[in-house]
Amino acid sequence: MRTRALLAIVAAAAAAVAGSAAQAGFTPAWSYLSPALRAKLTAGAGGTLFLPARVPFGYRYRSGATAANGTVTVPFTRRVRVRQGVYRWTKDTLVWRVQPFAGSCTSWASVDKTLQVGGNKVYSSGTGTTWRCVTDRLGRELVLSAPSAIAVASGLDVSRKTTSVTVALAVTPSTVQRGAAVLVHGVAGGCTSGDTVTILSHAFAATHEFASVPAVYAQVGSAGRFSVKTRIPATRAPGRYWMTARCGGGNLGVQATLTVTA
Image (cartoon, rainbow, N blue to C red):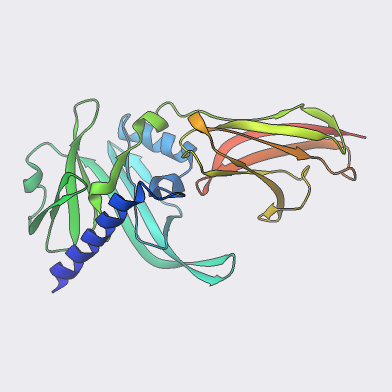
């Protein structure tokens, strides 16, 4: 019964993956990790990074991702809604792992079932683990494994995004009188077209806020580019203000400065 239940979860998750491509607003699970973190993991993995496209509903990346000796480990933790805009992290965690393995994929663990998910051959063990094997662009053989609650066939190679990831943030003009408008623009490398970039700065009007800091929003376009025009409040005190940006649930790791004059 346990095995059938786990396989049902895999099948349901796989169906969600197959149908997600046509759904607007689909946010891949790998985008919960910031571009800077994905770049760091890629370096530790040896140049190619495989991450899942889907995780079960309510699971997000919080912390604890590691990459060493070619092995990548990424925990996804479930969070529950307390009230609107407020969530609480639970102790429920699913671990995604990618590791080198030279040998037959069926010998990596005891095979209970063999599935075809998303056009990929996926193996399942009676202990609740699913896995599949891939060969990266350097010819290395890898095993992608996760609890059966994650459809392992949704593993997504994002190496081309993370090895040469480009992130940038700028404001034009960089010096402006209060009450004037500025153009905030940049590149959110690794974020999906259609995603929202949140730009934070105490120079902005407090119409929208994130973590108690005024924010403006921009949509990611082709090649990760984004831009938004905003007006600096006429009451803003003269001075130098920092800007940061977030996308896909993580900080982009870039900053820009704006000087406001009287």
